[in-house]
Length: 130
Image (cartoon, rainbow, N blue to C red; front, side, top):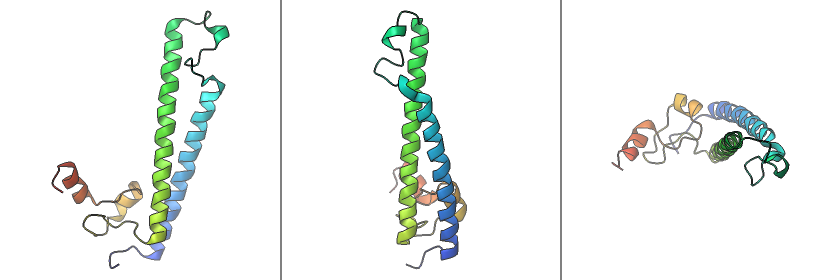
């Protein structure tokens, strides 16, 4: 494959991705700790406290838990995408546009390491031109 990053640059990407994976993992762990044992089917309201907590407070707690679950899932999905990026580094396909086979600019790959398309192809895809 003619369009490919050098081994040195791939190592640089790998290190950056591993750092991102570490921070995402820490964020997900922090959110999990915040959910704690209150992650039951009653929106964080235990049967003992159902009468002592105002309904609006229980609703707010439930909303916060839903938001935390969403953030945790988003973090988990991003982590999986970073794992796939590491696989592409191992395969030698990292940073190569799946559509035009051109090398995706290094700046884009550092910011969005799970990118599989160059900006031009991604924009065409969004506009429905591909």
